Structure formats: C-alpha cells, structure tokens
Length: 349
Figure 1 (tube, helix red, strand yellow):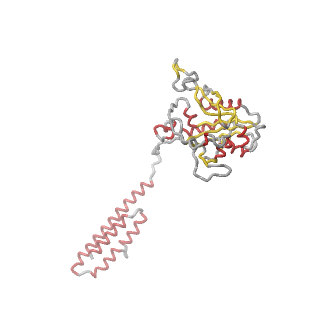
Figure 2: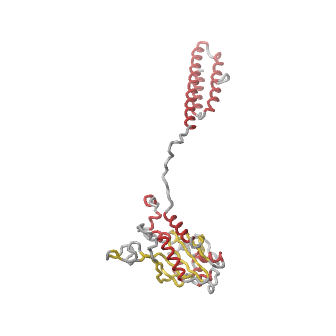
Figure 3: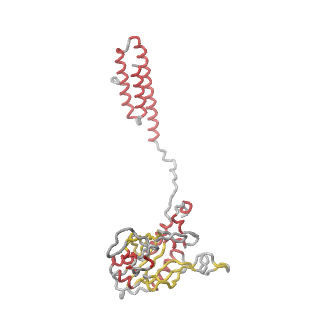
C-alpha cells in the first residue's frame, strides 16, 4: 500500500504544477481532500492492510494529507499574489519608449514629386510592371530590331509570345504608360504623372537593375515646348529650391521629336562650373544631367489613338533615384546604397 501512497503523492504534484488560476484550486482540493476524495479513499482501505502495518500506513496517509493541504495553501497564495499584480496597473508610470522608424528616402521623394505635380493638376496613375513588347517598344516608335529591344537592355519573361502584343518583358521604362493612358482617356486633355518600378540589366554606381522612374505626360490643343520648359522650371524650383535653374539641351529619343536632355544648375558651384578658380568637383561644367524630355512623337500619338493633327503634347521620364541624389547637401555618390538596407544610412532620413 506504500506504493499507492507514493503514486498518489506523485500524481498530486504533477497536477498541481499545471494549475494556472485560482478557479482550478478548489477542484484539486475536493479531488484529493474531499469526503469522497482520493486520500479518504486510501483511508477506507486500511482494513486491507496487515494489522502490524496499519499504524505506519495511517501515519503515512496523515503526512500525505498534511503535505497536500500545505502545498495547496502555498499555491493558493502564489496565484493570489500573481493575479493581484496583474490587476494593478500604475497609470502614473511612463510608457515604454520604442525606437521610431521612418519612411525610406525614395518613398519620401516619390511622395514629394507626386505632391508637386498634383498642385498643377496632374493625376497620379499606375500601369503594369510586367508589360507587353508592344506598349514598351512599338507604341513608342521603336520598331523590331531597335537596339533598346535586345536582351542586353531588357529583361524578357519566359512566356508564350502574343500574336498582337509580342513578348512579355519587365517594363524597362514608365513610358509604356503613355499610350495606355491615351487609350484610357481617349479624348484629351491628358495630364498624367506615373511613378513605377522599371527594370534593366545594369548595375554600377549610377544604375540598378530595378529602379523607380516617374513619367510626366501632357496632351492638349496648342501644347508646345514653352509649356514643357515652364513645367520643368516649376518642378526644379519646388523640389530643389528657388535658386536652382534648368535648361534644355537638344538630344535624340525615339519617342519624342524634338527631344531634349534636361540639366539643372549645380548646387555646389551654383552653375558657374568653378569654385575659387578651381573646376567644380561635382559637375565640372556648372550643370548636372537630370533626365530626358521632349514633344510627343506623332507616331506615339497615333499609337495611342490621338489625332496628331489636332493635339500635341510633351513628355519626360526621369529616374527617382537620380533626381533624389541631386538634392543639395546629400552627397550620395553611389546609388546602390539606397537599396543596401544599411540602417546607419537609412536612419538619417
């Protein structure tokens, strides 16, 4: 019978260790110490014990009963103190201070660009990052065989070619949204700003295989280069500051005619090209290249279903990273740091 007492004691300890609340205490008390409890059940079996062992058997049962009672009281006190602590909240104590995060610098730049163009009536739109060749090339006046279409400049997706739209690509520029927007609106005026990810297989200090670009498109009757220049001047002064200047430099893009490279005055030498009679280390000439722009090519208007005899328009497409890096006093020399995830760099914004 000693084995039965030991087993009962072991079972009790095991059950008590799993008790987590005051409501469970009464249940285990009744189960072991009640009239019909397990300990009284062993007392009732005393007649089955040999006469010469009954005294020791009874003494062991009484020790077990006292030990169970003591352990239950200890557990009751422990749980009561724990629940009292949980109920008591000192509202005068200061809250925990958590480290603050911040938006990524490119997110901040995108929000600022969007806000600047919204002020003059441009609508933010979004178009596919996985695009058809037709919208990325043919609709932009780049026929088959154009150098920009080879796999050194474009990511092609391994998917069946469509008879009408051609192969599937990761969008190499936001300009594919131009004809899509023309088809959506159908009849100008059109004032669009499209900011999206673009993909090209380049990786160096000024290029990344994935980058953000923002596209501006304005189409209406009587639109000309002066409207383009005025919009660029407005953006440059809003984004970089009133002292910065912009200029248009003749260039060639397949989807605009005439086409221009857009330059802005250097923030370091203020467009002079030199500092204290020494050539400016940043720009060398007084100007920094911002991106491309021009009047929308008539073939692009045709591809978008717009009458090029009645409507004209301008467009630009600039990399968000490049535009952001040219902010005054940033001194970012390698674009790849924007995607490094280095918290020492990111926490400065």
